[in-house]
Image 1 (tube, rainbow, N blue to C red):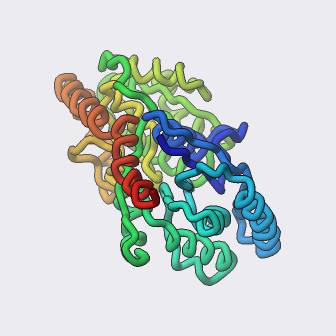
Image 2: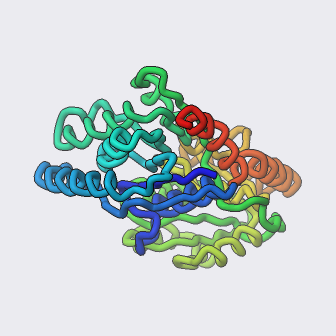
Length: 358
Protein backbone atom coordinates (compact mmCIF):
# COMPACT_ATOMS: atom_id res chain seq x y z
CA UNK A 1 0.00 0.00 0.00
CA UNK A 2 1.15 3.53 -0.79
CA UNK A 3 1.31 6.63 1.36
CA UNK A 4 -0.01 9.73 -0.43
CA UNK A 5 0.51 13.40 0.41
CA UNK A 6 -2.62 15.37 -0.52
CA UNK A 7 -2.89 19.15 -0.88
CA UNK A 8 -5.61 21.55 -2.06
CA UNK A 9 -4.29 25.13 -2.34
CA UNK A 10 -7.65 26.85 -2.83
CA UNK A 11 -9.43 25.34 0.17
CA UNK A 12 -8.42 22.62 2.59
CA UNK A 13 -10.72 19.56 2.62
CA UNK A 14 -11.35 20.15 6.32
CA UNK A 15 -12.18 23.84 5.97
CA UNK A 16 -15.32 24.60 8.04
CA UNK A 17 -17.05 26.51 5.24
CA UNK A 18 -19.03 24.24 2.86
CA UNK A 19 -18.36 24.51 -0.86
CA UNK A 20 -18.27 22.35 -3.96
CA UNK A 21 -14.48 22.64 -4.04
CA UNK A 22 -14.17 21.34 -0.48
CA UNK A 23 -16.62 18.53 -1.20
CA UNK A 24 -14.74 17.38 -4.27
CA UNK A 25 -11.42 17.41 -2.40
CA UNK A 26 -12.93 15.21 0.30
CA UNK A 27 -14.35 12.85 -2.28
CA UNK A 28 -10.98 12.57 -4.03
CA UNK A 29 -9.20 11.76 -0.77
CA UNK A 30 -11.76 9.04 -0.09
CA UNK A 31 -11.43 7.60 -3.59
CA UNK A 32 -7.63 7.55 -3.46
CA UNK A 33 -7.73 5.77 -0.11
CA UNK A 34 -10.52 3.33 -0.98
CA UNK A 35 -8.16 0.39 -1.61
CA UNK A 36 -6.39 0.82 1.72
CA UNK A 37 -3.69 3.30 0.68
CA UNK A 38 -2.99 6.02 3.23
CA UNK A 39 -3.86 9.62 2.30
CA UNK A 40 -2.33 12.39 4.44
CA UNK A 41 -3.53 15.99 4.28
CA UNK A 42 -0.03 17.45 4.46
CA UNK A 43 -0.80 21.20 4.47
CA UNK A 44 -3.71 23.54 5.15
CA UNK A 45 -1.92 26.58 3.73
CA UNK A 46 -4.45 28.48 1.62
CA UNK A 47 -3.02 29.99 -1.55
CA UNK A 48 -5.84 31.99 -3.09
CA UNK A 49 -6.05 35.45 -4.63
CA UNK A 50 -9.59 36.31 -5.67
CA UNK A 51 -8.98 39.83 -6.95
CA UNK A 52 -5.51 39.97 -8.50
CA UNK A 53 -3.66 41.64 -5.62
CA UNK A 54 0.12 41.72 -6.22
CA UNK A 55 0.87 42.41 -2.54
CA UNK A 56 -1.22 39.44 -1.43
CA UNK A 57 0.47 37.21 -4.00
CA UNK A 58 3.91 38.22 -2.72
CA UNK A 59 2.86 37.52 0.87
CA UNK A 60 1.50 34.10 -0.05
CA UNK A 61 4.65 33.27 -2.01
CA UNK A 62 6.74 33.91 1.12
CA UNK A 63 4.43 31.80 3.27
CA UNK A 64 4.62 29.00 0.71
CA UNK A 65 8.44 29.07 0.70
CA UNK A 66 8.45 28.63 4.49
CA UNK A 67 5.83 25.86 4.30
CA UNK A 68 7.71 24.03 1.55
CA UNK A 69 10.96 24.00 3.54
CA UNK A 70 9.07 22.67 6.55
CA UNK A 71 7.47 19.91 4.50
CA UNK A 72 10.76 18.90 2.91
CA UNK A 73 12.08 18.28 6.41
CA UNK A 74 8.95 16.87 8.04
CA UNK A 75 7.19 14.82 5.33
CA UNK A 76 7.20 11.16 6.44
CA UNK A 77 10.03 9.22 4.85
CA UNK A 78 7.71 6.56 3.49
CA UNK A 79 5.63 9.08 1.49
CA UNK A 80 5.37 7.67 -2.04
CA UNK A 81 3.37 10.26 -3.96
CA UNK A 82 2.16 13.88 -3.88
CA UNK A 83 -1.31 14.74 -5.21
CA UNK A 84 -2.54 18.32 -5.64
CA UNK A 85 -6.17 19.15 -6.29
CA UNK A 86 -7.28 22.22 -8.30
CA UNK A 87 -4.15 24.09 -9.34
CA UNK A 88 -5.11 27.20 -11.33
CA UNK A 89 -4.18 30.85 -11.74
CA UNK A 90 -5.98 32.11 -8.62
CA UNK A 91 -4.77 29.20 -6.48
CA UNK A 92 -1.46 27.83 -7.79
CA UNK A 93 0.33 24.95 -6.12
CA UNK A 94 3.40 26.61 -4.65
CA UNK A 95 4.33 23.57 -2.55
CA UNK A 96 4.09 20.32 -4.46
CA UNK A 97 6.71 20.84 -7.17
CA UNK A 98 9.32 22.09 -4.67
CA UNK A 99 8.75 19.31 -2.14
CA UNK A 100 8.63 16.59 -4.78
CA UNK A 101 11.90 17.69 -6.37
CA UNK A 102 13.61 17.78 -2.99
CA UNK A 103 12.22 14.45 -1.82
CA UNK A 104 12.33 12.64 -5.16
CA UNK A 105 8.68 11.57 -5.23
CA UNK A 106 6.19 11.58 -8.14
CA UNK A 107 3.94 14.60 -8.50
CA UNK A 108 0.33 14.30 -9.76
CA UNK A 109 -2.44 16.87 -10.22
CA UNK A 110 -6.22 16.54 -10.20
CA UNK A 111 -8.52 19.04 -11.97
CA UNK A 112 -5.90 21.58 -13.02
CA UNK A 113 -6.36 24.27 -15.64
CA UNK A 114 -3.96 26.33 -17.72
CA UNK A 115 -4.83 29.98 -18.35
CA UNK A 116 -2.25 31.42 -20.73
CA UNK A 117 -4.38 34.55 -21.09
CA UNK A 118 -3.60 35.32 -17.42
CA UNK A 119 0.17 35.26 -17.90
CA UNK A 120 -0.14 39.03 -18.32
CA UNK A 121 -2.15 41.23 -15.99
CA UNK A 122 -3.00 41.23 -12.31
CA UNK A 123 -2.56 37.48 -11.84
CA UNK A 124 0.58 37.13 -13.99
CA UNK A 125 2.79 35.83 -11.20
CA UNK A 126 0.25 33.32 -9.90
CA UNK A 127 -0.70 32.25 -13.43
CA UNK A 128 2.95 31.52 -14.21
CA UNK A 129 3.30 29.58 -10.97
CA UNK A 130 0.22 27.50 -11.82
CA UNK A 131 1.62 26.93 -15.33
CA UNK A 132 4.97 25.82 -13.90
CA UNK A 133 3.24 23.49 -11.46
CA UNK A 134 1.36 21.89 -14.36
CA UNK A 135 4.68 21.41 -16.17
CA UNK A 136 6.08 19.61 -13.11
CA UNK A 137 3.26 17.04 -12.97
CA UNK A 138 3.91 13.60 -14.42
CA UNK A 139 0.15 13.03 -14.66
CA UNK A 140 -2.73 15.50 -14.75
CA UNK A 141 -6.21 14.08 -14.30
CA UNK A 142 -8.92 16.19 -15.91
CA UNK A 143 -12.68 16.10 -15.27
CA UNK A 144 -14.16 17.52 -18.47
CA UNK A 145 -13.41 17.73 -22.18
CA UNK A 146 -13.34 21.51 -21.84
CA UNK A 147 -10.42 21.29 -19.38
CA UNK A 148 -8.51 19.05 -21.76
CA UNK A 149 -8.31 21.69 -24.51
CA UNK A 150 -5.66 23.88 -22.90
CA UNK A 151 -4.00 21.00 -21.04
CA UNK A 152 -3.41 19.27 -24.36
CA UNK A 153 -2.24 22.44 -26.08
CA UNK A 154 0.28 23.22 -23.32
CA UNK A 155 1.23 19.63 -22.45
CA UNK A 156 4.79 19.42 -21.10
CA UNK A 157 7.05 16.72 -22.51
CA UNK A 158 5.72 13.20 -22.09
CA UNK A 159 3.25 14.23 -19.41
CA UNK A 160 0.12 12.04 -19.28
CA UNK A 161 -3.35 13.61 -19.41
CA UNK A 162 -5.95 11.17 -18.09
CA UNK A 163 -9.70 11.59 -17.77
CA UNK A 164 -11.11 11.16 -14.28
CA UNK A 165 -14.87 11.74 -14.62
CA UNK A 166 -16.58 13.61 -11.76
CA UNK A 167 -18.01 11.07 -9.34
CA UNK A 168 -20.25 10.57 -6.34
CA UNK A 169 -18.70 9.28 -3.09
CA UNK A 170 -20.68 6.04 -3.07
CA UNK A 171 -20.08 2.48 -4.17
CA UNK A 172 -23.57 1.78 -5.48
CA UNK A 173 -26.44 3.94 -6.66
CA UNK A 174 -28.97 4.91 -3.94
CA UNK A 175 -32.67 4.17 -3.78
CA UNK A 176 -34.51 4.89 -7.02
CA UNK A 177 -36.86 7.82 -7.52
CA UNK A 178 -40.56 7.15 -7.91
CA UNK A 179 -40.53 9.31 -11.03
CA UNK A 180 -43.58 11.15 -9.72
CA UNK A 181 -44.07 14.31 -7.74
CA UNK A 182 -43.22 17.93 -8.49
CA UNK A 183 -40.36 19.02 -10.68
CA UNK A 184 -37.21 20.04 -8.83
CA UNK A 185 -34.52 22.71 -9.11
CA UNK A 186 -31.45 22.72 -6.85
CA UNK A 187 -29.17 25.73 -6.98
CA UNK A 188 -27.56 28.43 -4.91
CA UNK A 189 -29.14 31.86 -5.24
CA UNK A 190 -26.40 34.34 -6.00
CA UNK A 191 -25.81 37.02 -8.65
CA UNK A 192 -24.15 36.06 -11.90
CA UNK A 193 -24.40 32.63 -13.47
CA UNK A 194 -26.73 31.10 -10.86
CA UNK A 195 -29.22 33.93 -11.23
CA UNK A 196 -28.93 33.62 -15.01
CA UNK A 197 -29.99 29.97 -14.75
CA UNK A 198 -32.98 30.96 -12.63
CA UNK A 199 -33.97 33.55 -15.25
CA UNK A 200 -33.94 30.95 -18.02
CA UNK A 201 -35.92 28.59 -15.81
CA UNK A 202 -38.57 31.21 -15.00
CA UNK A 203 -38.97 32.12 -18.66
CA UNK A 204 -39.34 28.46 -19.59
CA UNK A 205 -41.95 27.84 -16.88
CA UNK A 206 -43.99 30.70 -18.27
CA UNK A 207 -44.32 28.81 -21.57
CA UNK A 208 -45.61 25.53 -20.08
CA UNK A 209 -49.20 24.36 -20.49
CA UNK A 210 -51.25 22.09 -18.27
CA UNK A 211 -50.73 21.40 -14.57
CA UNK A 212 -47.24 21.48 -13.09
CA UNK A 213 -45.45 22.31 -9.85
CA UNK A 214 -41.84 22.98 -8.93
CA UNK A 215 -39.85 22.73 -5.72
CA UNK A 216 -36.73 24.88 -5.41
CA UNK A 217 -34.00 23.89 -2.95
CA UNK A 218 -31.40 26.58 -2.32
CA UNK A 219 -30.76 29.95 -0.77
CA UNK A 220 -28.34 32.84 -1.01
CA UNK A 221 -27.93 36.59 -1.41
CA UNK A 222 -30.04 36.72 -4.59
CA UNK A 223 -33.05 34.96 -3.09
CA UNK A 224 -35.21 38.09 -3.35
CA UNK A 225 -34.48 38.31 -7.08
CA UNK A 226 -35.30 34.62 -7.58
CA UNK A 227 -38.55 34.95 -5.62
CA UNK A 228 -39.48 37.95 -7.77
CA UNK A 229 -38.87 35.90 -10.94
CA UNK A 230 -41.13 33.13 -9.64
CA UNK A 231 -43.85 35.30 -8.09
CA UNK A 232 -45.96 35.09 -11.26
CA UNK A 233 -46.49 31.35 -10.66
CA UNK A 234 -47.93 31.61 -7.16
CA UNK A 235 -48.31 28.32 -5.32
CA UNK A 236 -47.02 26.32 -8.30
CA UNK A 237 -43.49 27.14 -7.13
CA UNK A 238 -42.45 26.28 -3.59
CA UNK A 239 -39.22 27.54 -1.99
CA UNK A 240 -37.67 25.02 0.39
CA UNK A 241 -34.57 26.99 1.40
CA UNK A 242 -31.14 25.48 1.94
CA UNK A 243 -31.38 21.80 2.84
CA UNK A 244 -28.88 19.29 4.17
CA UNK A 245 -27.68 16.38 2.07
CA UNK A 246 -30.19 13.86 3.41
CA UNK A 247 -33.12 16.18 2.78
CA UNK A 248 -31.99 16.87 -0.79
CA UNK A 249 -31.59 13.14 -1.35
CA UNK A 250 -35.18 12.57 -0.24
CA UNK A 251 -36.29 15.30 -2.64
CA UNK A 252 -34.58 13.60 -5.57
CA UNK A 253 -36.44 10.40 -4.76
CA UNK A 254 -39.81 12.19 -4.58
CA UNK A 255 -39.53 14.30 -7.74
CA UNK A 256 -40.37 13.80 -11.40
CA UNK A 257 -37.39 15.58 -13.02
CA UNK A 258 -34.52 17.94 -12.25
CA UNK A 259 -34.47 21.28 -14.07
CA UNK A 260 -31.30 23.36 -14.12
CA UNK A 261 -30.02 25.20 -17.23
CA UNK A 262 -26.44 25.18 -15.90
CA UNK A 263 -25.09 28.54 -17.05
CA UNK A 264 -21.28 28.27 -16.89
CA UNK A 265 -21.34 25.33 -14.49
CA UNK A 266 -17.98 23.55 -14.30
CA UNK A 267 -20.03 20.34 -14.43
CA UNK A 268 -22.47 20.30 -11.49
CA UNK A 269 -22.71 17.56 -8.88
CA UNK A 270 -26.49 17.95 -8.62
CA UNK A 271 -26.78 16.42 -12.08
CA UNK A 272 -24.95 13.30 -10.93
CA UNK A 273 -26.91 13.08 -7.69
CA UNK A 274 -30.25 13.31 -9.48
CA UNK A 275 -29.36 10.84 -12.21
CA UNK A 276 -28.03 8.34 -9.67
CA UNK A 277 -31.55 7.86 -8.32
CA UNK A 278 -33.04 7.63 -11.80
CA UNK A 279 -34.29 11.19 -11.96
CA UNK A 280 -34.27 12.55 -15.52
CA UNK A 281 -32.37 15.79 -15.93
CA UNK A 282 -33.03 18.73 -18.19
CA UNK A 283 -30.03 21.02 -18.63
CA UNK A 284 -28.79 23.07 -21.52
CA UNK A 285 -26.20 21.43 -23.72
CA UNK A 286 -23.16 23.24 -22.35
CA UNK A 287 -19.44 22.42 -22.01
CA UNK A 288 -18.75 20.77 -18.67
CA UNK A 289 -22.41 20.01 -18.03
CA UNK A 290 -22.57 17.58 -20.94
CA UNK A 291 -19.67 15.60 -19.42
CA UNK A 292 -21.88 14.41 -16.54
CA UNK A 293 -25.17 13.88 -18.38
CA UNK A 294 -26.35 10.56 -19.77
CA UNK A 295 -26.09 10.63 -23.58
CA UNK A 296 -29.25 12.18 -25.03
CA UNK A 297 -30.51 15.28 -26.83
CA UNK A 298 -30.57 18.27 -24.48
CA UNK A 299 -31.93 21.79 -25.01
CA UNK A 300 -29.51 23.93 -26.98
CA UNK A 301 -28.14 27.15 -25.54
CA UNK A 302 -29.13 28.93 -28.75
CA UNK A 303 -32.73 27.82 -28.32
CA UNK A 304 -32.93 29.62 -25.00
CA UNK A 305 -35.96 29.30 -22.74
CA UNK A 306 -38.26 28.33 -25.62
CA UNK A 307 -36.44 25.09 -26.40
CA UNK A 308 -35.88 24.42 -22.72
CA UNK A 309 -39.64 24.67 -22.17
CA UNK A 310 -40.34 22.32 -25.08
CA UNK A 311 -38.21 19.63 -23.46
CA UNK A 312 -39.92 20.11 -20.11
CA UNK A 313 -43.32 19.87 -21.75
CA UNK A 314 -42.44 16.57 -23.43
CA UNK A 315 -41.53 15.07 -20.08
CA UNK A 316 -44.65 16.48 -18.44
CA UNK A 317 -46.88 15.03 -21.14
CA UNK A 318 -45.24 11.59 -21.36
CA UNK A 319 -44.52 9.73 -18.12
CA UNK A 320 -43.09 6.72 -19.97
CA UNK A 321 -40.59 8.93 -21.77
CA UNK A 322 -39.60 10.51 -18.48
CA UNK A 323 -39.16 7.20 -16.67
CA UNK A 324 -37.13 5.70 -19.52
CA UNK A 325 -34.80 8.72 -19.46
CA UNK A 326 -34.39 8.30 -15.71
CA UNK A 327 -33.52 4.61 -16.05
CA UNK A 328 -30.87 5.39 -18.67
CA UNK A 329 -29.41 8.11 -16.48
CA UNK A 330 -29.19 5.82 -13.45
CA UNK A 331 -27.43 3.14 -15.46
CA UNK A 332 -25.02 5.67 -16.93
CA UNK A 333 -24.01 7.13 -13.57
CA UNK A 334 -23.68 3.69 -11.99
CA UNK A 335 -21.20 2.59 -14.63
CA UNK A 336 -19.12 5.76 -14.92
CA UNK A 337 -19.58 8.25 -12.09
CA UNK A 338 -19.37 6.37 -8.77
CA UNK A 339 -16.33 6.13 -6.51
CA UNK A 340 -15.11 2.62 -7.52
CA UNK A 341 -14.63 3.85 -11.10
CA UNK A 342 -12.63 6.85 -9.89
CA UNK A 343 -10.46 4.73 -7.61
CA UNK A 344 -9.70 2.26 -10.38
CA UNK A 345 -8.92 4.99 -12.94
CA UNK A 346 -6.60 6.79 -10.51
CA UNK A 347 -4.56 3.80 -9.38
CA UNK A 348 -4.26 2.06 -12.73
CA UNK A 349 -2.60 5.28 -13.92
CA UNK A 350 -0.53 6.14 -10.86
CA UNK A 351 0.59 2.77 -9.48
CA UNK A 352 3.17 2.34 -12.30
CA UNK A 353 4.84 5.60 -11.20
CA UNK A 354 5.47 4.08 -7.79
CA UNK A 355 6.79 0.86 -9.27
CA UNK A 356 9.34 2.80 -11.33
CA UNK A 357 10.43 4.67 -8.21
CA UNK A 358 10.98 1.40 -6.35
